[in-house]
Image (cartoon, rainbow, N blue to C red; front, side, top):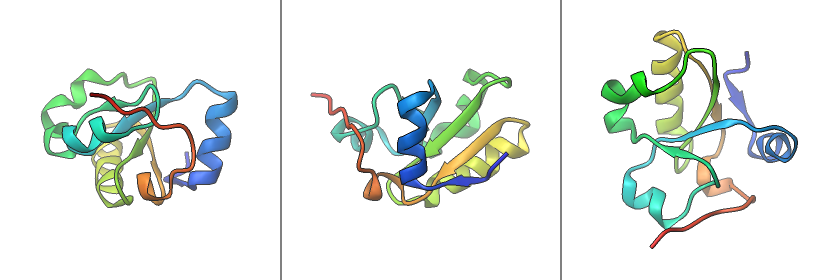
Length: 101
């Protein structure tokens, strides 16, 4: 399992596959714009909310720049989950974005 994936490769991947995306930014960042179908679990809540995730699912983790998502990937991997960090985060994201509110 890859620890990281580039923004470009991830954008290509979601064109052909249904993937599970976790956005670990804070709720106000998530509401301002996120990848469609991403689940918001802020890094600050991951330690208590990771039990919401399925062990048999591969998760792709994103944040603003890639730092928080890497910390989340390390945490999830240590807990026995399959996770890949999306390099560059939303700063480099060129795909579809959904905003709420």
